[in-house]
Image (cartoon, rainbow, N blue to C red; front, side, top):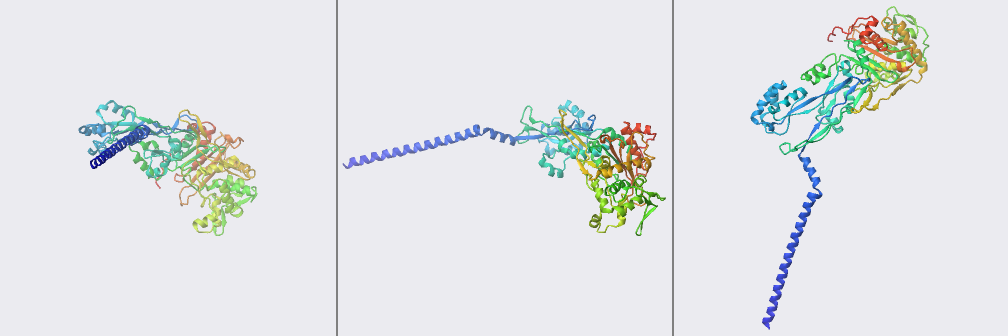
Length: 633
């Protein structure tokens, strides 16, 4: 019995051992199968479900993107004929050192220096021996002409590793005095990049630096494209075939309000005299010509001597980069008497027919203010005062009837003391003084002598030629000033379809035009027919209304600034036919009263449809466009 009991226990033990072993085997098998299923699912997920995403990520890591620079939009005058600014085909040259045998690189660079007319040391510095095994391209030279690239391509076996890509270069076409209007472009600076980075600019961007190139850079620059290459860790191209690329988009074309023929006429009429000319359509604010002298050639900046030329212009004491029509201020002199007359008429402080005795001087306290004609003008009303530019008449009206606050209010109503908002960078506001301004700026009280000086456009008063053009536009329009502008149309560069036009915009509007402008227009016509410029304004092509000015600048014994502001035709009621002409010649030239002389030629040319040379012949005048160089100040 005992033996049987033992045997049963042994059988049970063995059975339990086998069960446990089988369970362990099943557990291990289940674990292995689960693990295999897990890894199989993970592989399936990585390769099938998420494969495309990981492939894109891997591609991005190994991709190199190269920008494809967009061509800038072209710039035309209002007639949309010959362009003012286009793009010249040029190339950037680069070199991949690892693509050339190491022992041949010095010989290759020597031969390349001869082809490019560059010192060998220049290229050796770009490609030192330490980078001979590099696959990343090294920039060698920009702005290379197509003929040079063609020559290199024809002997490409002699230049292994040499690469080039097209990069358009801005080209300007005989701009002359339009350089200060159109401006120029250049490489973006670190300071500019900090401001413009979020607008899509990068370190290789070309940006407008001045003029309309800067003002409308967002329209002209276009959109850069990009070329994608797949590379290995050393930079070797693994793409094969044609690389994937997103093509660049050319910038918009813009048409200006400028008339090229009128600009050339005004430029030649001003001649080699430091100053400016503004010609605009008063009924719309369109600027037909904007001349500033001296000027510069922006094409010179892209030559090998470009940096040296640019630096010499920066240090030129005649300041050729200064657009004198909008970025320089002067005392308006007797042209300000137009605004004085408007204040007299508008506020009716004195009957314009009232006679004021104008002797050789005006006494105010212990000060004496001289008349420009030592004989005086005798009994004078507003019309005669304007025609003869009688200082004593306007001293009297300004000090005894108007006062500085009324004078400054009318000056601001005519657009002085504030920028016009013309679409050019750097416009100055000028200065319209009053008692509050002097107290705040100079910590001194306003005196009667200050009012006397302001009344004849001197003293603290400062204006730009464009502001005086706006003031004359208000007279021509009978009380309205339209914002002066240079952009006429924006066009698609491919289809040439008009996408945007600039509409006229009123920026100043007189509250009582009927009371002021008709008698003022008559008085300004009287200036031409029986006043100071009568002997100079000899054109018979059109009837002119306007005013001369001779501005002092505070330097004793110096010459004077010469002004002439006018509009024509005086006798035509259609405002669309009128133009305003303002000529300002700086005192740095020998004073020869050139402003009205130049305006005479300009009006003749515009209304007789003549060139500068034809206008001179009609008027019987010699060609005085070239004058001796101005001595350094």
